[in-house]
Length: 263
Image (cartoon, rainbow, N blue to C red; front, top):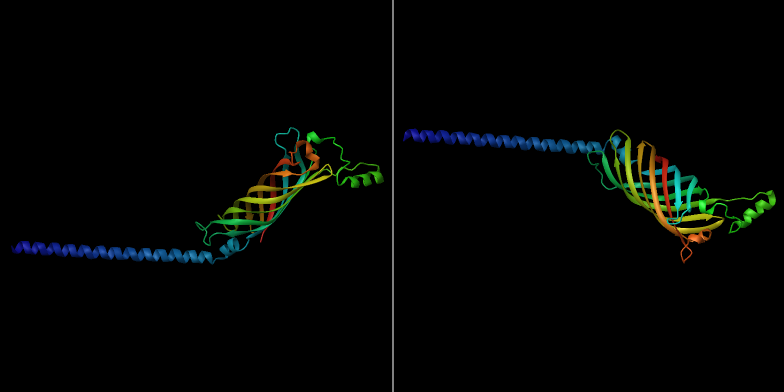
């Protein structure tokens, strides 16, 4: 009986020691976890206060781009009514608003881009279906007539398109190293588009969609952008392809290569 009592006492002592050891281990683990979490938070705070974070994310939110454009204007369903740009340029200026302060994985941020001014200009060569058409009439016909009277030469003002608009849409920006930033975006661009064709003026509201990719280092950036949109133009020079309301449905497609400045 005494042996059994002693054995039970030894077992209880052993279990008590094991319980205390487990509690000590758990306490040590909790302390380590808390210390680790504190260190991570301090590291994150240090990163948010760093010169790199300030230069990359707090600054350089505004952008201004100047680009060379390859643009086409097409009346789908009508053979020969396609214009290709001889020369085309763009200018845009706007700002990015980031949706969260701390970058994901310390290098990725999502944002909203707002472009306050979007200008595209293109001068087209004549569409095959309109080659050789007399340009003597139209609201600018007197200008051509005056020039011809003075010089003896006919003047052809050519076909031109000017788009004025704004745009807004989501973007994602990655900062993998130092001051390098890579951004991808998609934007909706409500635009008033103007056409000067055969010395006749016409215009239309066009909903453009822009998408692009840019790479920036400090202030300088380069990028590529595509855009497309369709509008119905009240263009007197295009009555042959116009609907019953004298409006011609035309689609604009373009690819831009631009140099930008971020500040």
